[in-house]
View (cartoon, rainbow, N blue to C red):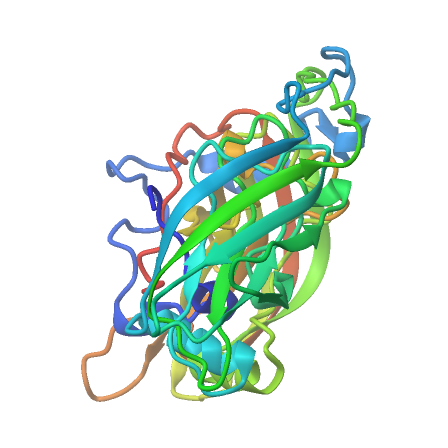
Length: 397
């Protein structure tokens, strides 16, 4: 594909290969070019002098609501009509099959629509027709994640049986569609092997249609969401967070198919947002292993588009307060139709083992319970000037 796709297992388990590497090269409290972080960076997420709205529903002004009709005069649009490769030697499907299918199976493929193809508003049915001739494909079943769900195991629905040469349909509600202006669909699909034995190796042809079943809704106006405010407070609460080791995550996932606990903003990340500040005040962080000592915090996040794991930039810290900068692109904001943010944030305590050998700091290698307070604020522009571009997670494999 034209952009990186986070493996379903990675997004669900977040193993964090911090166990395999050390801390960031940039020292906390400095920018990538070595300059000092502004002294007031630690208070930017809670600036008492700033004009703050507590909810994006307080927005005023902007253009009038309008309609985005991508259908033209058609009631059926083909978004994909081509061959999909499916390989048995890909390690990710092997792991996914063991955890999701819970039966012996070989092969499988994570798949997404090509850039520029989205499930339009007004869609009532997604119709998929698969055809194959390779004898090494014994059958296929479909798991899918619609645009309103986050990219994690519990966000996928299935299995939907796929019969060769026969269309299979998915009923689509308005909130499941991609939002206007998105050039990349937030839908995701997993083609799993089916049959006995369950094997999928080779190529199959996929025809992917969307069928219009309802009127296109009036899209909210495009206001300057920050015309009258400087930032929105999306979360401001105490929390208890269990930062799990990779071993604990795998064990829990095998037992329950649930991924790690996440911090989710209480309010959606509104359109026009281009930066967020996340302030975490830690009151207590205790490790299960007494030989460990705390080194700092690592914040890993998945934006609403759900395609990539990112690592937030540490802007400032004290003994107990950490401020992280999170850049936000236009494609990463929440849909204005959704009631709950699709953003997921994961906190890991970075630690150093007090052993008679040289060890490197490790984030996500040990179980830690964190008690503290989190405040998340969204901004139209970077208030610090040093957050920079989204930083793909270097620790995540």
